[in-house]
Image (tube, rainbow, N blue to C red; front, side, top):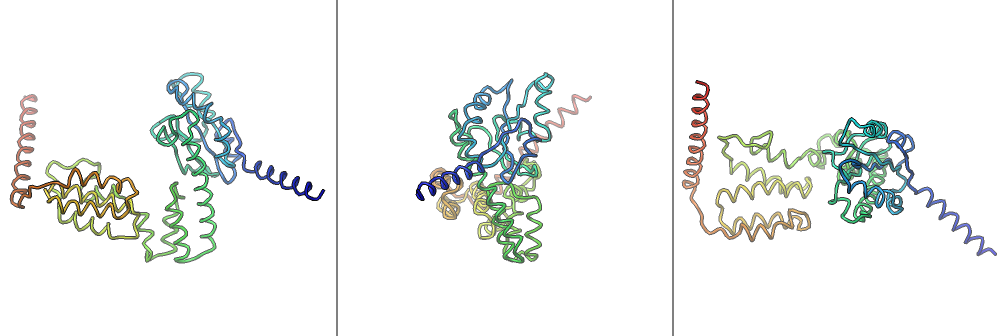
Length: 340
């Protein structure tokens, strides 16, 4: 008798826990936000009049019980995006969308994640993140992991509220390293906890490998100036410093150092030396995409036999600049003739 009662209690408890972790659904994004709890809102974006694949996945993936299970206690909403903006359906869709932003680059299908305040913190787009099967097995896995990251983020932020100084900065740095968007005030909070940046976490958050490359190549839009001449020594020193800075993220350090590797090849650096530079990236972490690329780069770029002198390289650059100047002068002359 006692055993049967215990069994009933355990079954009821499991059912209640299961119910508390069940995703809800809403008809509109604004309604979903009103219902949202700690797991926030997950929106599925599809294109009814232009993306057939996203419509198929609406039933096979988005309405699947496994997707609901993976979503935890989030509120689910499906939001259509029409190509024909002037149709009656598009007008109705605007009401469903409410305050929700469009998916990046208007890509469908897209799954977007929002916390209960409406802040978008993650995004899964296309087959790369949702998978290629109709049940979007990869997408289900990624949804579950993303909800897990949101919960971890909240846990760390709550713990950080109880700490001060470097202890607080360490917890906030863990928030920054989660693969979801961090709260907007996180960097400010890290700087307040560690004003002198002794731990390097502020530097870690502020470093941007792309902007670092733009700075060394003296560009703001990615296009090099016609007369730009890379300063190889400056690139070498800056990239070496980044590689040695253990406060920075491994992938950012590898990305920055690849600039040095690429410029070394343009400078006709000898094969063995170039291999040594590539090995540094691989040794830092062979599991990242940059680390995995290293063996291929060594095979492709590590067999350079000819070593030019600095004078030869300088002459080659001057020759190239002269040709480019000749082209510009010719274009100016042609425009002058057309005007007259």
